[in-house]
Amino acid sequence: MELLSIAYTLSLLTYSLGAVLYGSPIPLKSVKRWGILMMYDSLASAVLISIYSLILKLGDYLLEVLGVSWPYFTAWLTGRTASLVTSYLALQSIATALRASGADVLLELVKHISSLIATSLTAIKMIYIISAVVYTLRDKILALGVLLYSTPLRIGKSVGAAMIAISIVYYVGLPLMPSFAYIFETPTPLMTNDKYGSLDGVVTDILGKPIPYPVVRLYKNSRTPVAVTVGDEEGRFHIGPPQSLVQRGEIFEFEVVFMGYKVRPEPHRVEVPWSGELRVYSILYLGEGLALMLVGIFELSISSNTNIPEQIELSLNVVGSEVTLSFLRLSSVNVSEISINTEGVSCRWDSFSWNELEIEECRMQLNTGAYIIRVAYTGASYLRPHIDEKNYINISDIADYLGLVQTVAVSYLYSYLLLPSTYLIALSTASFALSRFIGGGLRLRIV
Image (cartoon, rainbow, N blue to C red; front, top):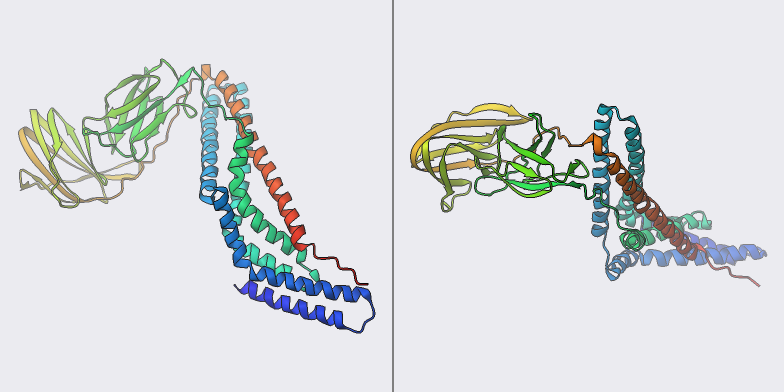
């Protein structure tokens, strides 16, 4: 490294200057003393330059011995950040509902709690910045510290020793922060109580395959949805604390929207709390941005593998008088062949936009009978639709919940601000002590 080469050159210069001062005919003890100190400093910096790689490996070895790692520390920080962001967004949803209802007293309480959580987020951000600097620039900080340590006349020795100490102590000490926090922090109260429950489930198609990014709507005695959420890539969704406040015993109705179609799942009507599977019996998701919508009475199954990539064979038995069959695809999906009972089908694709997704549809009708449908296509990743999610909050019964949220926010302030700050002070103290040891020098008396 170029910095180490410069440091080595400065070390030689320091030694040469020290030798000149020590051997000079000037009859002053202070000059002799400075000569010895400069020679000592040059030797110490030469040693640090020689063991530079050893210091770096020593840090990794200590982490291995202590049973901690930087990836675990980063995951710990990410988890804490996610909980804070979730709580903060939930409070913003509550604040919006309170602002619309005119409940100014409760709105001020929400603002106070939001400020506590925002302060905790700021503390987490500072830890992120410090850890990112230490992890990515540790070798450069150490090299720059050695360079400053090697400057003649001790111009940058104290600063260099401090940088060397920080590169060692913080690199080994920061991943130990989770263990320190677990010792002193109390379990964070859950932002819920016995009054509230949640609706947790996964949306699947007719064959039980998860539907990616389903839009789940919740209704209660109205044609307007009281809550709207988008599931994840595996079809999982959550409606409940902290974003929504659904009371135990309340009854809601589900509706699922996928690729522009609104469908009724089974079960359709549930009571809080509930967890399970929402099965949509009119959709078959073929994967990679291609789906099949069926309306009518039928029996459906996927035939044995054709051993051809991105080709699916279906067995469809139309029991009723007629079945409406619609292929839905993203505009980036290329369907090269659709055949029914080995005969190719010419399909007309109609385009439409749905929440910033460009979708094409091919619709056909099949009469009573048995059919073998084969589809060959080149797929594409199904994207998350841009949906304005809506949380359900009962304004008349929110005061108790806000009291619990305030307790959680204070707990966040203790766990995410006070404890990490105390630990960083301890690391800074250890770094200062190590820097004094490295940069203190030997006080030799010349008789």
